[in-house]
Length: 391
Length: 249
Image (cartoon, rainbow over all chains, first blue to last red):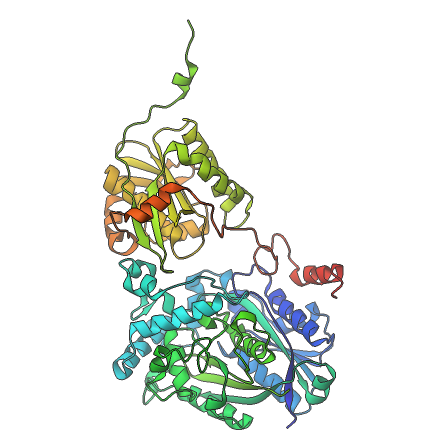
């Protein structure tokens, strides 16, 4: 396999974007092309989850490649639920690593806010099992709530720990221009004050409003290239060093131990093995915190902390900016936002920024190895990536 | 004989109980004071409402234009039985709510404008306005309309307002919705917050001056960062054009 480098990145604000979906995919791609100093690529992958239902648009890749005047490059959509973004990066990686292409644009877009929140929640819920989960009214918040309750009972995680994740990630998002939520929150305001129950009501107990990610529109892009191309572009050499993917049962209730996220564990292990590094080598990570509990659990499953001890590391401040292993410096899905199909590419964007040393006020000092975990379904299809700075 | 026309033009306000100020903690940990303002303070508010008239986003323009006229009418004695409440954080104006008494039993909600977005600033101010009508004045119901989707979600959906479509609301003559005492009681535990009395230092700070909003709603600076395809249906083309103009293409 050839080595694969990230030579360009771009992103939109994660917010409400009243633009055609193809524009939301094209804009970050333009920024990434400009960043890389390229005007053409060999191939285009477009990550998206719900365009057919949300935006009444199919064939998105054809629209995007033409909008960008990149024809006749090959182009296709990659759909893998909320892990579509990292899946698309994985496809780009394989294309370059195999020698099929020298340059690949991986862009992404989601426009959830074209529909109301109920419809958006329903579209996302359609990733659950149609006969065993969805028809009984399962939504992602309800699945996450049941998971959280079990996790609390088993490992002693409390609502305060969940709130601490939210406060941390909102603080980080305040330093990120592109984040959806620029709102300072405090434990007192969302948990302890007499007004906390109104400020932060239960959405699906024990998950409260500030435990859930916002419904975001947005897009992000990365350009992958071979070493030969990367060396010519005079950019920091950020290598996509590890790619891992794993799946688990479609239905959460069919898992032997529902509090174990085996797909996260498996995908991370594969990515670390390919990259030749261990979890303790990682300097900065973006984890898929669609719900605050997931940041804690994923931080354990990928190997940063022992099982059941992620919340203790959080208590010690290890995952804050300035801590031993800052997690979700972008604000995470929790505060940066979660345009589902674009989220994985957005995570990669943040890690590349960090490894380049371009993350401004949220820069992690001397970051050289970064990690992303993009969580599809409710943990049934997960893609993890490891990035290394080489110069 | 000379006629004092002003006496004819000026409505006679009916006395209503004053609103006792309250305060609450926001999600961000800041304490927000909500208090009633006097006519003398209206010019201080107008100067902060006026810029919103030019913000074509989430219907701030329509709401601010109407609120401005309502505040001015109150200041100049051209509206019957109006009141104005303001929400302040460390003196900073973060929300304005107003309304009036339609009759002894029925209130007419006018506007709720958040000058700081998020963290339920507007929602808390609206709940307080309803509390004033139902609990302090003792009315049976308040007529409400929404001019924005945000308002519709906050009032009609969250409070499950009842239809009073046979009554044209004073804002635009559109069909009214109503918050009844029963609905308010149902929402009391979840949507209505606040503590009394307001600590002296918080109240004094609020009364000392109505300070300008530090982060008022603005029209999007970068069309690609938000929002309306009305302005630009081809965002990337616009960005490309801008880069060319800036010599960065």
